[in-house]
Length: 295
Picture (cartoon, rainbow, N blue to C red):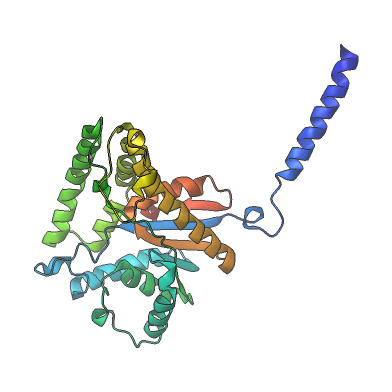
């Protein structure tokens, strides 16, 4: 028995050694260096929450601008050397042109269509302060409404979770709309671990319990590939597919720029999913925005 085991153990050791060598990170790659720090800041899209009849929702007012300046102070402490925003790569040339003008002091964001967007109000401002040469567009096509999942067995679980999520956030948004909550307070809430976990569960977990239904027609969803029995899982796959493409855009941007500290400004819905992906990528270290954002 001993004469039989010895050659086997030697062979097993050799195999383990080969496997270990094969999985070693290649020198010069991100995996062989210190992990890249990535911080994702999420929130409501500032253009979408703007209500012309309510000046408290206008981030261009002096009051909100002062509050945003304080937020940018906090983000600046992260010391990003790359800033990524939720814009499609097809818009990169346009963003480059606008950012160049902004850095030269030749662009007034108040006169810019969609100038209230976080791309400009956070991305451009922090980028100019940090001296970064470019604001990178890393969004991906595929945006769709969460309401397209509307029927099926157990749909009440998804509907109830949606109602609960809205009820949880409504008082905070109402305080902001009333002017009693600052931009810092709003972004602290939208980047809180509790809110992000609840939103991630709503979008990427609860729908899997919904079966035997259909999705509302949507130009971003090819319904011919949707299995009615797995309608909830199909819905998740639509959202997750976009996140995977955003992840690809982020990591390829990092490879091209060799940046070490990445600030990504994106809708809160994506953060739980993207953080989950990056936490399994040894080339990256996820930094919670809640460590930097203060009311």
